[in-house]
Length: 592
Ligand SMILES: *[C@@H]1O[C@H](CO)[C@@H](O)[C@H](O)[C@H]1NC(C)=O
Ligand SMILES: *[C@@H]1O[C@H](CO)[C@@H](O)[C@H](O)[C@H]1NC(C)=O
Ligand SMILES: *[C@@H]1O[C@H](CO)[C@@H](O)[C@H](O)[C@H]1NC(C)=O
Ligand SMILES: *[C@@H]1O[C@H](CO)[C@@H](O)[C@H](O)[C@H]1NC(C)=O
Ligand SMILES: *[C@@H]1O[C@H](CO)[C@@H](O)[C@H](O)[C@H]1NC(C)=O
Ligand SMILES: *[C@@H]1O[C@H](CO)[C@@H](O)[C@H](O)[C@H]1NC(C)=O
Ligand SMILES: *[C@@H]1O[C@H](CO)[C@@H](O)[C@H](O)[C@H]1NC(C)=O
Ligand SMILES: *[C@@H]1O[C@H](CO)[C@@H](O)[C@H](O)[C@H]1NC(C)=O
Ligand SMILES: *[C@@H]1O[C@H](CO)[C@@H](O)[C@H](O)[C@H]1NC(C)=O
Ligand SMILES: *[C@@H]1O[C@H](CO)[C@@H](O)[C@H](O)[C@H]1NC(C)=O
Ligand SMILES: *[C@@H]1O[C@H](CO)[C@@H](O)[C@H](O)[C@H]1NC(C)=O
Image 1 (spheres, helix red, strand yellow):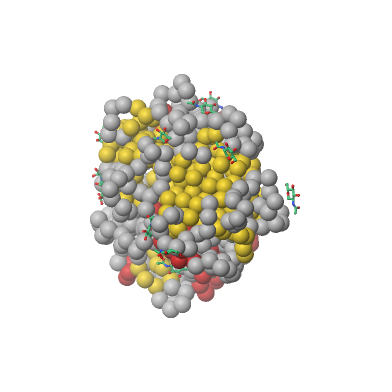
Image 2 (spheres, rainbow, N blue to C red):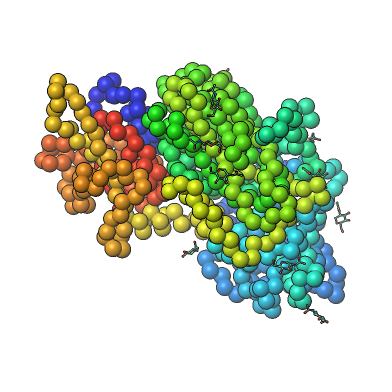
């Protein structure tokens, strides 16, 4: 049996995030938006999807308003794919049309749903249009077809934050681009409007303003500015779908595709965050229950950054919100346990930041907002924005991040528009062999699909058979007989070829790793017998296994295809475990 008291701190960490407890349901009541509009454009029916009711816009009180001699048409996409409401139908027109939403005063999320498919009577290559909401230009000469192709997705959502003054209506106008080509048209599949808590992102009248990276003065984000959501990540925890948000139906994406290096994921799924520092509606609890860090190797950490790379439009100002919460009880217990510096766009945003110090304790979420201007208005290339965390000397020499949001602010003319990406631009060469640069072409595909289809992760999990072997080999006893050396490596097994390829995470020569077949593992765990379950994690069960006729006892982690955690998280955890060389208990991972 494992004697817990003899375990090293690193192992204790390992136990905290590997033997997950099942998620306790959130005690947090969701936010109740005063306005909640879901308009299914081009449809005459009301449809319920994910327990949310979409209202058809035919004869709707919101319009559209248009000249009677140039009526828009409603149409059903010729190819439905696996899309669902509101993507199945669209309203299209060769002339402008306007929806008018009589909403309450205050800040709103406006979400536009697009499915650039072929629609009867419209040439798919001519969808060039402008979208205006109130005084703001959200999109100009926008091609949904190009956009979808650029991100390699069939459907997508554009999200904005807009303030509506008292006694004002929110008018959203779709207008074909003039001068583009004859026959250009505008279309929309769905519109969602959801109120948000006052000053969720905006600076309150008496607020202190935001840090302006590289500048001395502070920035006040006022109601006259519209925001466009560029990215919203649940760091280390996988996607959180809109229905799982705390009442505002925000999509929190998986950050894994935007990381230069995955770092180490920590999870603690059963605590209630203490919202004494920030509004409880800032983010769903789950954001604060997972985090990424560099890992337990101090010397190694000091040589590294934990870096996210996102592509953004040049010449705009951005709001970057970083969410933090220390949640490892008995691990982070005082100021100076974990201190780090934050760099945004390679500039210092904050030095010597300590989450425990700023929040005043453990399990108290906080966030930091930063403003930055990137690139120049003349450039139309993708701009790669780096967000890096680097440890400062402290007890753990580590960093932490739980969530991230990136918003674009309108320019001085009230516009958020950026030219289309016509030919997909190649990504710049990675700076180091380990650096992986996400591109517009592939990076968002999965997360968007999750929002839409929901089953990509499950599919991935089933399709990819990979397994990890982590063995602690007790070397021949040296000298005083107490020297132990541990050994780790993992292999990626390609299900189609049966060949495994070593990956960058594997740091030891192949010969030193011991490989097991599924048959061996089944024998060791008595075909994954229930009586041998020693724990349940987010990925599935953890089994006790006896190898070499009981000469070695191992823990076997099995990735359950129905697990809420996906293959990518499993892989991340494996990578993380590969670093814990001092772990006492040997690990074997299996997925099938
Ligand atoms: C759809 O719902 C709206 C309001 O929720 C209602 O006014 C309308 O009659 C409904 N339409 C149909 C076809 O049920
Ligand atoms: C912005 O608008 C909201 C509601 O419309 C109001 O409560 C808030 O005080 C306004 N903020 C500023 C800075 O004017
Ligand atoms: C929105 O459109 C309606 C109808 O055309 C108009 O009466 C109203 O003034 C517009 N509101 C704004 C803020 O432009
Ligand atoms: C709209 O964008 C397309 C593709 O980028 C371009 O060919 C066209 O000239 C643009 N039209 C206007 C009016 O800017
Ligand atoms: C657009 O159509 C008009 C009349 O139908 C024609 O005179 C003009 O040349 C066309 N322009 C282009 C760019 O095709
Ligand atoms: C939440 O944190 C505050 C300190 O910021 C503390 O005073 C309070 O007791 C905590 N509440 C709970 C329920 O732990
Ligand atoms: C971490 O990032 C900052 C800002 O980009 C950079 O100056 C520094 O050299 C990086 N450190 C390492 C170890 O990569
Ligand atoms: C930031 O640093 C990365 C890698 O160090 C580099 O590739 C990138 O071009 C830098 N960005 C800027 C704006 O200097
Ligand atoms: C913390 O780390 C940053 C970046 O490595 C460095 O610029 C800063 O001087 C460090 N502060 C201390 C007190 O070590
Ligand atoms: C956004 O647009 C509004 C209206 O044009 C303007 O007053 C405001 O200053 C703009 N915001 C920024 C950050 O430039
Ligand atoms: C685009 O997505 C499809 C499937 O959705 C995939 O087969 C293809 O490889 C992707 N292309 C790129 C360039 O990522």
